[in-house]
Length: 231
Image 1 (spheres, one colour):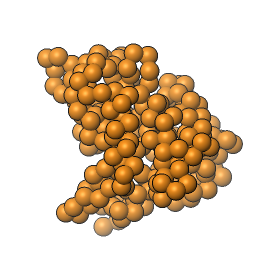
Image 2 (cartoon, one colour; image 1 turned 60 degrees about the vertical axis):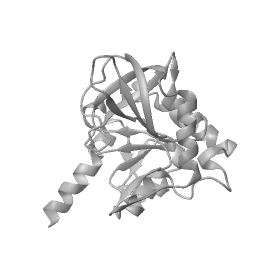
Image 3 (cartoon, rainbow, N blue to C red; image 1 turned 120 degrees about the horizontal axis):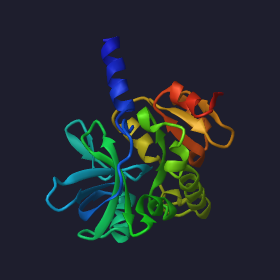
Image 4 (tube, one colour; image 1 turned 90 degrees about the horizontal axis):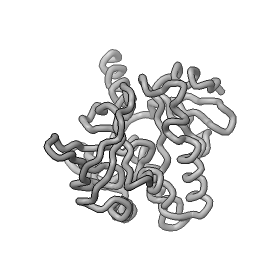
């Protein structure tokens, strides 16, 4: 039983973690939007891709739990609308992608012209900066390649402005990843780095790190490799 639990934990920890290097941008059409951080993208003549936008986490619109679905209310709908505003359905976009996650989705960053749509979602307050460093992608250039400084700064600006998910009255009671953990009866499984002091904590101590200072690591070794030290 313990071996089974550990195997499931490893599966979840790797669910969003890219395992291979990033490909060059591809131009195509955004054919559908599932929620605030999931879209469908297609290059003419190729198979349509379901894409999980990296670096962000938006309110859950249809989280499967048991035999049903749960959501995070009106903000989940608003986040989906915000994404459609930045990248309308049937518009021409560019996708910078990595590997598939364990749910079969392509991990990627969406661009409209030179605009990083993922980042715009954070700036608008409709997405939380959800930076995950793991696998082969968690290398020496990770923080630069993924514009970590810019994403966390955008998160802090939205939090300070109290907009979107950070609004004191209409914002989220739980960040999306916390909502998933609770509703799916799971425990935190990623080590959490604090960019303000380059320390990291065990998964179940994530609350000790300010939300917009967090970088999540799929292993303790990944955190140490990036120059973070255990707190």
